[in-house]
Image 1 (cartoon, rainbow, N blue to C red):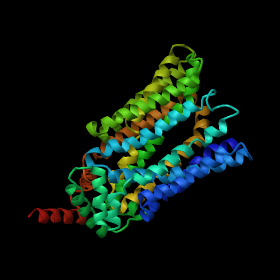
Image 2 (image 1 turned 30 degrees about the vertical axis):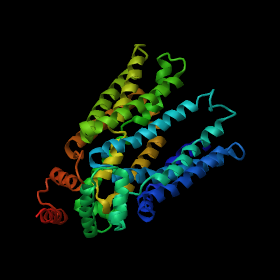
Image 3 (image 1 turned 60 degrees about the vertical axis):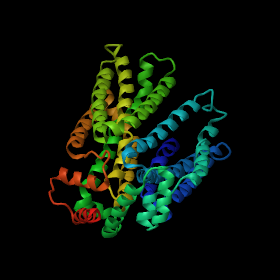
Image 4 (image 1 turned 90 degrees about the vertical axis):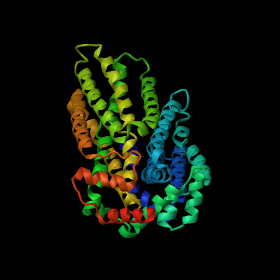
Length: 430
């Protein structure tokens, strides 16, 4: 019971706090909200780091829960901040850097968790408390990070401060286009006011974008990636790897390498294209994985087929479904609705994460090696959905993305706000 609580408490914390990331960012500003969230991270790390000194199970569960609260907040807040400070032409690449930082952290933790480093009876508590180090570093570096110019201009109506922030972010580049885009977006935000979570589903302008956002996050979690990690050690053992923990670290390295590749591809190939490529590759890898596991007892070399499928599966995941859903949701919505949309998307992601962690071992026991055929079927359905319903957002403004959604839904008439913005731009040109 203590073990289950220590694992699941992290996801429960993430589920609860995911609703507050956007709200906290709107109330305090993006930078101050990140600084406040870091208090939770440091507290969680401190509790886990001191767990050897007191009742270990209570301190670990409490530390994991508080760390989950922190991760729930930043899972929505960081994509919002990145989407608001990044130039349109680099929005996808900079958004993917967030995922690259996450998988790099996972790889580092796998390495320092080896027996001869920190993963032993004497030093395990230091391993758990190690996350305090990047927390302190980030807290110091946030003093040098400019506030989001979109937040300053659109939320606070501080045009001069927004210009100063943009100049810091863009260097010597011309910021006229950015200011014009934010001015238009602010005028539209004034008309639409702040959008509630309920309005995302009841207002026809937001319904399709929010449903697509939720499906992207469902795709990420129900792709079977957690199942792959669940099975990877046993697959490597069967393949004759004497130290399967090193093979698992190899999976983490592949994770990191292909996320880095995705940084360079996302602005060239586009978000939608990479997502489709990633899902298609994972579909075939899941089939090969299941076939390899089913025939394992009859053909010993099938273990190597399964092992290769694991590496390829992870590679395709990090090319598309891994990083793209987070920053794509931030691209789907304008300033008035972005915080609410990110809260719903983050909650969906964390809830699915929790359900999979809870249910997958039972499903795997029931289905055995056939379990990945279920994931293959799910990915086939999600791939079709992406092909027909998800628009490309590469290099497009928020207004252009809204027009893409109208095209996908078959709506020919532009909403009033979009028509007014078109008129305003024409007037400015004259």
